[in-house]
Length: 253
Image 1 (cartoon, one colour):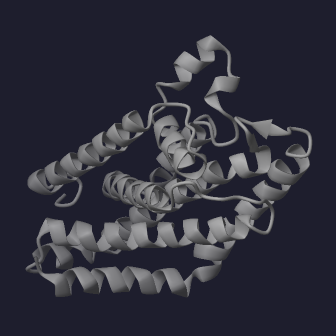
Image 2 (cartoon, rainbow, N blue to C red; image 1 turned 180 degrees about the vertical axis):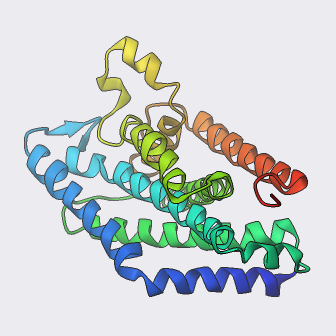
């Protein structure tokens, strides 16, 4: 492993994050704060508790996941798409850097940014609700795995995208609706039996449920299933990326 190459890519991406800190950090934190005000304070004053937890505290894991998934995907997709757009990716591919080192640099930076944003949003939630974490280590583990897995997905999207419109297509039309319908603002048990069955086909349900378990010790689905789902998703993304570099699909054309 060429750690110098990995760190060079990683630091370059992190510097880009801090150069655009208003868009990269302040904007998602401000947007999530508005969710806390609208859903946590306004609606939360009318809904007393969900599964023994105040509604304001109940939505905190879902809101963190919402920001983390979208930011990890968009940061990783833009990070690899931009070198494709300006043509510098060919310099990267011709350099003595393996595909594993390229992925580690871009995905590592995107996951770090998403995790940074998630932790700041978690800290911001204390201004709005009283919340405690039942399993802190599990919370960090779920947050880290989610950041890495969705950064891998974003990397694939960045390779696939042929223009800036396609770059936003999957995050806007697929990921955001799945997160909203994945139990970010409600418990799956609040739905009718038919919708509960349909909702279980949404993979995001397992991620949010597992992350919520780390906070409150209760979950909509078994914690083992949540871990299995995120492991399968991460493995699938790694396999696709390996295939992309092996065949040169979309990067050597």
